[in-house]
Length: 374
Image (cartoon, rainbow, N blue to C red; front, side):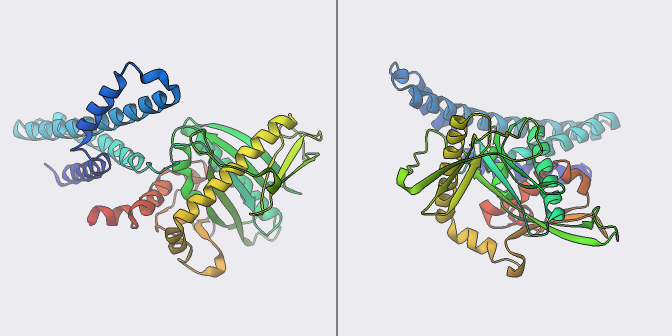
């Protein structure tokens, strides 16, 4: 087998090893037998919520086993085809099998990343909060560019995107925006995006065409579902209604229906500006509970978070990624050192490589390449 094909096969094998580890492949059949026995119980649907969770957990295990076995079998089949083609000197068979291996490697790498999404809230929907940093119009425009980038990414994933609130910039862009992004593993994928994002470019708002640096912060926190109980003391919050302002359009309401909730013990402030005041209060309360839940997750992972935040120059704040458009093209994640020159692709929502590297780092404490070496 040629060196390139062998390297591809080795990559797939490493992905399979990590998949097997996450699946605990040796015990998987016994766990599935246990699920099947519980599913056949005549009292299963006496508790519908528990039954639905059981069915979801069983299906997730079935999907994981199927994925692992399918990749393993396709790898063996294509290696066999390549060996037979080389023995019979059939270049067409060898070429087709090598191309199949390349496609399989991409699938295996994607499944490897998805297997890492097994945190307590990884499967949940998520809120994505965008806040422009100091810098006026420049930062507001950068915040708007990031907003577009994340919406594009979510749409490519097939996720549902809902704008919860938005504050427009004075001249261009947005000062802030909050989105609810719904779909399987939405929080798991996006959680690594929390932090400060830095842009370097020739400013379109500068007549002297000078380079400008802009900062925007991103905060991601999971939507709290019915399985997670967060209590909020009514005496700890203040609810204000106000007139939403902006340039108009389908997302902007100009009545006094917008709601702002302030949580006094933590200082958290959440807003919602849909058409119905009752709907806004419900949305804002869910956002508050999600923020409180995220704080609890952060406390549980304080050591990891502190280690990440202490990397790099503290003067830059909690900067996680740099997007340079001038004098060269480069997007670099400062936590993982993952970089790409395809700045247009990234800003159009091609984020899986960046997210995957950060996800692997969060799980293993080292880069994906290091994890595969060690």
